Amino acid sequence: MARGVFSLLFRTGIGSGSGGGGGNGDVFGKLLSDILVCPLSRQALRYCPDSQSLISDSIGVSFPIINGIPCLVPKDGKILEDQIKSTGNDDSAGADSGI
Amino acid sequence: MRLLSVRVLPLFSRHLHPLALPINTLRSVLHTLRSRAETNLQFRRRKNHRLRDYRGFTEVSEEEKRKLVGNVFSSVASKYDLMNDLTSVGLHRLWKDRLISKLGPFPGMKHLDVAGGTGDIAFRVLESIRGVGHKVMHDSFVETEGQTQIFICDINPNMLNIGKKRAIERGYTNSSYLHFVEGDAEALSFEGGSMDGYTIGFGIRNVTHIEKALAEAYRVLKKGGRFLCLELSHFEFPIFKELYDYYSFSIIPVMGELVAGDKESYQYLVESIRQFPKQDVFAQMIVDAGFQSVEYENLVGGVVAIHSGLKL
Image 1: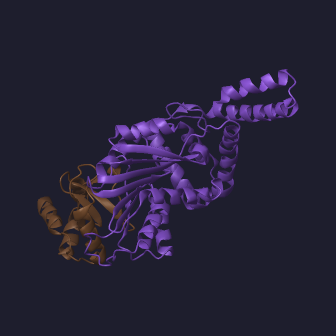
Image 2 (image 1 turned 90 degrees about the vertical axis):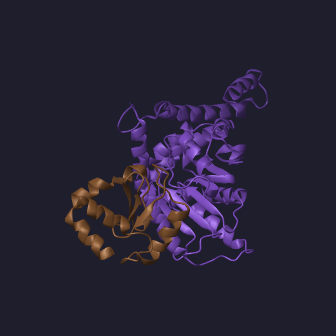
Image 3 (image 1 turned 90 degrees about the horizontal axis):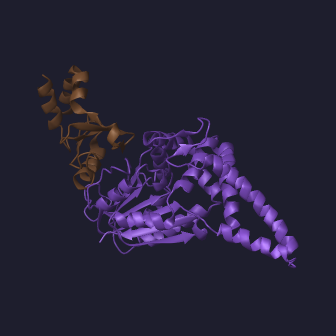
């Protein structure tokens, strides 16, 4: 169940155009592919419009976006698996509406 | 320099030089100012971030310094720009203008302004680029190839929020050129070799590990990229130094209390200036980070200094 939710989240990619993500998603998408990277691993980030966060797939950490400002301070990163476990069913509902 | 002024003056007065009387007056004024400043310094001089404050003489660890800096800027954020104008008597605007002229912004550049929360420097870069009209700027969100991108990075979200508000007031809202990112100067979230310019204005003295910030600056800059640091530095002219110390330790914290309602934060800020390495030492640190053509320019005799370097 958790794994299924995990893969659904990953499939929500750049340009999926989910609610509230429209223009911002494109801006973040372009920024991410060009310049922004994870401050910890220096690898690429992925924008997740549902959770309004940037996800570092290489180390499984997410960084929140608050008021349109990505918070990429290392200590602000939340480990993804813990987040999924704690939110449980809520995630699957959110992911479905995102696709 | 201080020793020189002590030795020379008594010599004059002993031989009843015509200037003896006014010099004695000057000496006593100097002595009063110096002893007052030294008393302040005695209590406030810190090695390894030792603080004299309501917490007492405690050594402040790096983690505590981080928290302290965080608290300072959260507390002073809303009055930060006003306090800059007051404490520097408006001069900080000229200093920042000078920084931008040394940077030489160009359309299509990718620029990173670190610790630039309220946006002063980033806005100047943007305005400077707009003034250079020889290239058409794209307004499309999608096309970022060759488009000017200015990033404002700050560790404090309050400062960034104020910067965003100011950007809106200036009409930069729909600009795809300006981006606010919360980040740590010691661990930047930008790809290596992605920036044409890197500026840090009045921020590097608040970083816990300056060498890490410099290393990160080197990493994110492209080859040929320019590093610029504007920072309060060391002012050594005799007589004026005492006045400057008096102003720093006695006047500024009071202004902080009256305007921002936070005396301790401004006391900390003033002390952090004295803690910061001298111009030459800091220049060497920049060289150690890998930069070349490192130089510095003193403004107002060293009250501020602009250090610059190139990544070649």
